[in-house]
Length: 298
Image 1 (cartoon, one colour):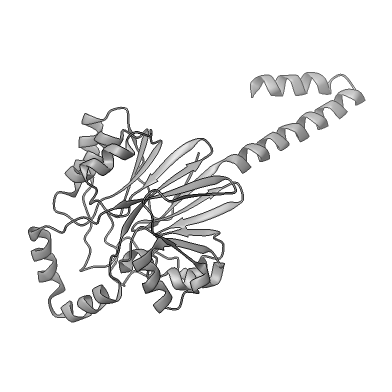
Image 2 (cartoon, rainbow, N blue to C red):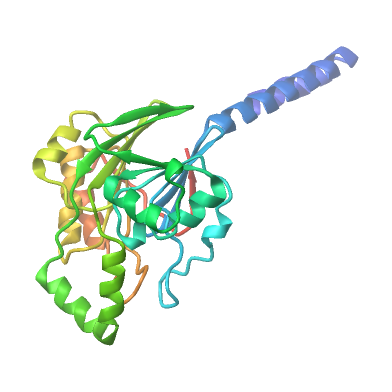
C-alpha cells in the first residue's frame, strides 16, 4: 500500500498527464477491489444447523431454521420472511429444527430444495411446491451450478443416549404430548451430508453426528478445507465431534448446533472440551466459532 501511494504521489507531481495517470490508477485499483470482493465467499451462521453461503452472485442455504421459541438462546431476530434471496436450499434431514421454515422460505425465494425422499414428503404436506423439491435417492448424487458443485452422501442421525433422554424428558414434563406431535410431524428420514466445491475449496456439512467410521474414512479420501460439524444430541457430543476432525483432518472446522434453539428439547452445549480436544489432537486444524448471524468473509 505504501508503495502504491508513493507511485501515485510521484505521478501526480508530473503535471496534467500525471493527474490522468493517477485517475487511471485509482480506477484500476477500484476495479481490482470490486473484482476481488465479488470472488470472495461469505459464510453466515443462522443458528442451530443453519447457514447462508454466498459465492459470486449465487446464494444458497443449508438447514435454515429461524423460528425458535421464546426461551431460546441466543435470540434470533431474523424471521423466515427476512430471507428474501436464495437460489438453492440443501437439507440434511427432516427434523423440525432443520426444515420447519423451508415452506415459507422456499415460497418466498422460489429456491429449489434438495432433500431426502422423506423430508420432501413432509415439505410437500406442509405446502411446499412439489416442483421446487429435488428428491435425493442416490448416495453420492451430485450436480453442478453456476459457481459451485454439490454432492450428497447418505449418513445417519446421532443416537440419543439414555442420560440425555432422561434429563430432557424431565425438563419437557407436561409438554411431552406437544413434543410427540412435533416428532410425528417431522420424521427424520434419510440423513444426508453435503459436500460443496466452491472456488477450489471443499466445504463439507453434517447436520447430525451419527456417521459411521466407514462413512468418515471414505469421505476422508478427499481433503476437506472447511468442515461444519454439529454438537447436539448426545452427552458425549464433544468426543464424537472431535472424531470427525481426527478422521477428516479439515483445515478449518466450524462447530454448529450447540445453541439452545428450542428449550426444553434442546440444550446449550459447552463446546470448550471440543475445542481443547481438537487443539491438542489436531493442531493443524483451525477452529472458527461463529456468533449467530455472523458473516465470515474469505
